[in-house]
Length: 436
Image 1: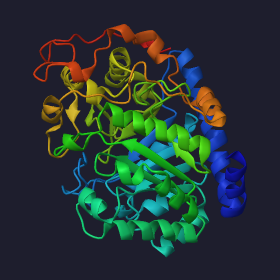
Image 2: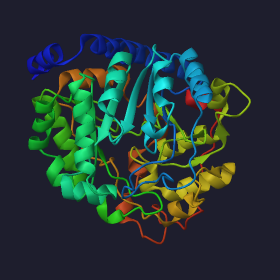
Image 3: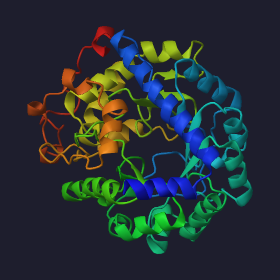
Image 4: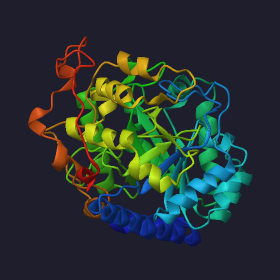
């Protein structure tokens, strides 16, 4: 498998783009993580990776979307984007995830990406606006990889995305990138309607044959105004996804991304560990994209370093999440997020202003944390990379006690996961020194 992957990298890539990936996202990204570790030891904080939703608008209407895609357009202007990236670069950051809505609806997106040649961007997109001309420009930049979402075969994809002919347009966007030798990834939000079609060797083999270099299978999270919990995976299906990812990494010449497990297969949450936080399309600084609550903004009149380092809301979130689960606190303990918002008077960052009500209506369920069912990485290179750069940074060792964790699916639906009425579970008291 290692030889086949090396062969693909040698014969199927533009070497200039491959070098930029290795240097900007690889070497500089690794250094940003080491700087993060040093900051933690000093009792300071700044996430080494940032996800930025540059716009809320989208041409699709996907099931379970939490973004106000049909609301009045909100976007971060280029000057603010550049200022945010430049302040993060000053802290050592070199990798940024660009989200929407649909990022390519931001008319100045390409100018922004082109103006930051010394960092690397991963753009989450449906691919519909990646024409041959756009793909040529991405190749010329060399510091951008599109991660294009495919949510099912023709029929399922149209249903999942809320529009006709979505699959073919997305596949054309992928092909435009590959025709121009742009390093391209494909991601899927695995749910009950697409798990059999896309969590399959046949689909991965097709991606490899096309020239796709990496893929990402993340699980569907029932959140937002139309959460559609009937699409969410059960415990056995979650394990099936994890097993497929581990096996594919060990047997096929394609990189498979996974953000929710360490090398030993132990679950983690990148936001809870402080590895990454999110900036919404209105500039709000949120724990992660699906938690639309904030007390700070990139438009606050203070340096971003000071904002992240001193945010009591974000600090309490990290400790709260790490204390109660190694999985997703949104799915397992939504009641705690409601209390956190009340404690800090956090604002609802959605235009619909229903974020709290949506959390209150969420029925607790299993996420990636399945105690006793850990599946260790088979790929030694992946295990080494996770040990060096992607792990829990000791967060769970300080806060989480496995014996205190209660399976959210065993909870009474009318109460919190610990059998207590919502609003009665006490929040932990934390201090700056606890972060180190």
